Length: 153
Image (cartoon, rainbow, N blue to C red; front, side, top):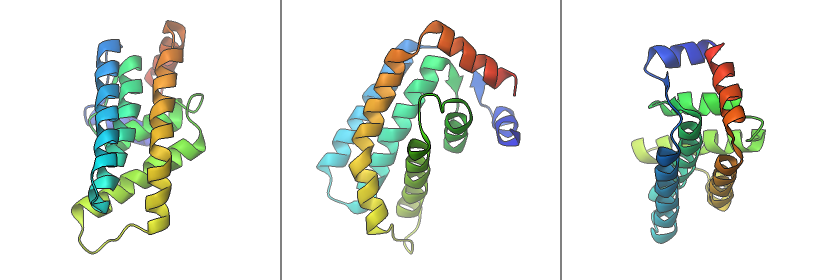
């Protein structure tokens, strides 16, 4: 929970739930997925795969009303408060993708293992579909329950 407190100190906020923003981030997720499919560069495929998943997750956060500009904080919310919707494999996938994206995007001497690369690419579409499904399932009571859990931590 210390990480969540740190995230709030660094600007994460509980805001009004916003279905329009949730839809806009889903669109960004789908656009990133399409870009991933079209490009040939391994590094850029990794980045686009990660952003496709991240924007999918962020669309869920917007539906709940969580504003978080720090990616690790968004993933922490997922890990601590959204396991009713995402499973441990989903968490591991986005964390692995986050690390792979950093390695591919910021370092020239870090190569992403081909097994990890193929795993990410093979699961990104399913992750995005899951985010869409979660948004459709979330009702006002679910949203309030999650917001209360977060507020009380």
